[in-house]
Length: 260
View (spheres, rainbow, N blue to C red):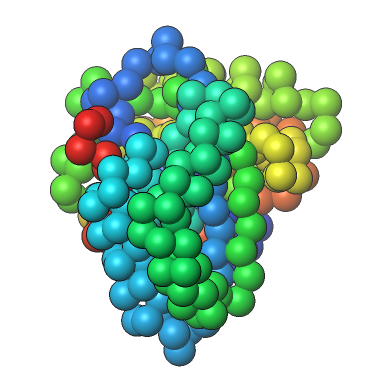
């Protein structure tokens, strides 16, 4: 779900974020805090960057790093690494875990590996985001299985300051309309927190491919009919700017602690 692209200017810039499996979620779940690393990588050094990341992940597994991470890469060479946190206090534990990893690997070894990684980067930024299942549409039965999600879109919406409450209420109306029309493709909503240019939200969607996604979008808007057109107009009235990215989930660059 998003305001119709032929009515909203979609610009190719900004960040991404992780989409949880809809079947495992319910509308009553509480917001989930994430620390998100945004790393812009030199196009000519992508191969060495990914090789260094894989070496780091091998060390995370070997030494029992306690925090999971999920990685995404976009079509403009941004890599986004997402760490789910219980709360902001967890960020201190996250930093402590890296210190402990350095002691296990040997500080000089971790520093050398870190140097290889940052040498391939043009810039790096960390931000905090909340995944908001309460304002996401999570159909009971999705059209796609997790392994079929080969193409992701992230649409970032900068909301007019003071309109956050109205925007979140509009999201709930989209949820109700999507349910009424038996939509099978979810939209996952995230809200920017510390480190972001608030108020900002992002809608995350996916398809098998770019073509599959486009076909699904066309069917969605046809199903929404006049009700969707009216709701889209009301949504656009609350938005200052919209930007988008496309890319994919990178399971080969992700990590899950064995204890989890």
